[in-house]
Amino acid sequence: MLDAGIYEQLSRLVIAMKQKSSQNMAGNRRSVQKGTSAEFSDFREYMPGDDLRRLDWNVYARSERMYIREYFEEKEAVVSVILDTSASMHYGKKSKAELAQDLCAVIAFLTLHHMDRLVLYDSSQMGNPLVVSGGKNALPKVLGWLQARTFSGTETDSFSAVRQMQRRGAGVTVIVSDFLTEAATDPTQDRLEKTMQYLDFTKQRPVLLQTLCAEELRVTMDGTRNLIDMESKEKLRVTMRADVIARYEQELQKLSVRLKKSASAAGGTYILCDSEKERRALILEDLRPLFV
Image (cartoon, rainbow, N blue to C red):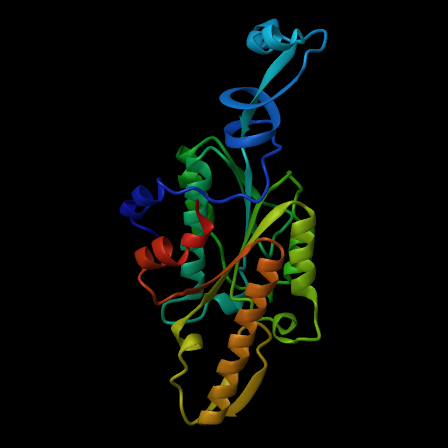
C-alpha cells in the first residue's frame, strides 16, 4: 500500500465532478439545492412562509418589491469505484492487481478527505458494495477491504457492472481495470460505448483507469511460447517474431485510443497506468486530469 507522505500531498487535491451534488447529507460539494451557506446563489421573489431574515432590503428600497437572497447549500457527492478482480489482473512482476488497489486507495482517500461518500464495488460481487462516508477516519476500513480482495474471477463486462450499481445521484464513477476483454478489443462490439452512454445518462463523470504491467506494455519475449489465458486457461502457441509483436502493440494502441475517445465523449477521463512506474510520479503526475 501507499506511504503516508503521498496521502499528505493528496490532501491538497479534489476530484473534479461533472454535475452538482444532489445528495441530502452535509458535505463540501456545491449542491443543486439552495441553502444557507456563505456563497450567494441568486434572488427570487418572496413567498409567504419565507424567512424574513433573508429578505434583501436594499433591493426592496430600490424597487419596493420583496426578494429573498438564496445561497448554495453544500452537500456530499458520491464517488463510485469498480475494481476489476478478474484473474488477468494478477499478472506482471509488478502486478496490475497491486497497482489497482493503490489507485482505489487514492480515490478513496480523496473522496473521504473531502467528506464525500465512497461506494466500492468488487467486479465479481457487484451486489455487495462497501459504502463508506464520514471523513478520512474511515480510510482504514477501505484499506482492509482492498487488501481482502482476491483476483481470480472471469473477465469484467463493464456495461453489466455499471447497470448493477446502486443509483445515488450525480457523481463520479471510476472503473479500474486492464480492459483486456474480447468485447473491448473487438471493434464490432459496442459494450464500451454503451457503458459510457449509460454513465453519462445517469449524470456520472466516467473515469477509466487502465492498469497494465511492463510485460504488456513493453514485450521482450522471444522465441516460440505457449501462452495461457489466466481466466479461461486456453492455450495459444505463438512465435514471438517482430511482426507479431508489432501487431500486438498496434492493437493495444487502438484499444487505448478507443477507451480515451469513449470516455471523452461522455465528459469523462481515460488514463493509462503503468504498474512499473514509481507510485508518487504516477499518482501526482499521470492522475492529474482527475483533479481540480
